[in-house]
Length: 99
Image (tube, rainbow, N blue to C red; front, side, top):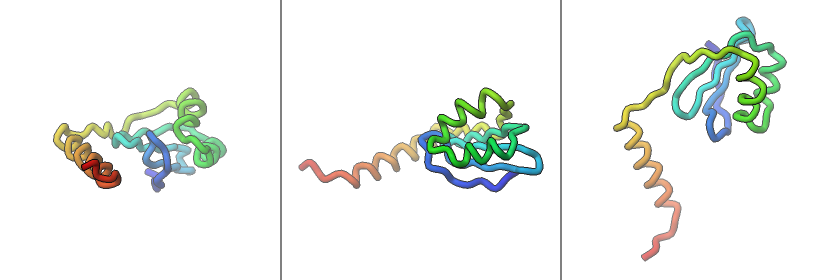
């Protein structure tokens, strides 16, 4: 496994690369973790530098490299409900009261 680093993306949470094994790792906000095998260092560097990680992944990585799902990231309904409530409260606290 590679050291993962957080990225700013609407869909991707973190990315990592193992240069010895030429493997790229992508963790999505859903929690799912994928490994892409046979990715040369130059393609990793381009992915890491891309302004839009999601677009680069879809256009340059997925069509060329085989992916393996390592963790499915499926959350329980209760966990997802709690996360939704927290997000709602955070958003509500940012807005001025209407009354």
